[in-house]
Figure (cartoon, rainbow, N blue to C red):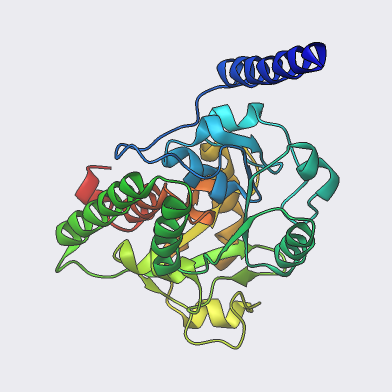
Length: 299
């Protein structure tokens, strides 16, 4: 009887020692400045802008997987890939052993979240269609990950910078902007888009009036009638933006009577900065503002 009692004591002590060693070998979970420990220490991000948000909230070490295309900040490129934004790999996500999967509200993401939740995985779906949605998402993700203070500081910083820029641009004219999504066939950003919000925050006006589609195709006649003063094209590929701008200027010479073309106010800008609603929001707005009001920045 005494041998069985000694054996039980030995097994209990062995389990306690094993747990202690495991805790010592595991990295300490990140904590926010209030001392709260996040409930999630292995996070999978399902979109590049979500990845940027997680890093901006000082959760880089907790990220266990990202989608292809998550290339900012540079450290994100070293994270395991879990498929693409449009075609996530549920098997790879599970292999990351996440305790939180952060998604957007696109249909593919909603279907993914439903499947993962049925298997017992926690998912956080965020809607980021507008600038207001972005600020709501910052707060939601911050609270869910124990980074509430960092979320508040990030939101306040973005709002403060944008308001300061708007004060600088106050009482200046609002150039009419044509935002080109695709050249051939020509497709542009309409007014019911977050791009329109960026244009207005940067002190401009969308040259395209109300449209049925968010990103409508338009013809030459509409461009001529819109009296476009500035043409902006977000770069679709990585590379030398100055060379891409030269190619854009050459392309638009066919409409030489358009003020933006005759004044050579055709710009190609970093597509990631202005196409991802995330923590680089102010950089995107300022980039656009430099195209619309170059004298303000000494450009």
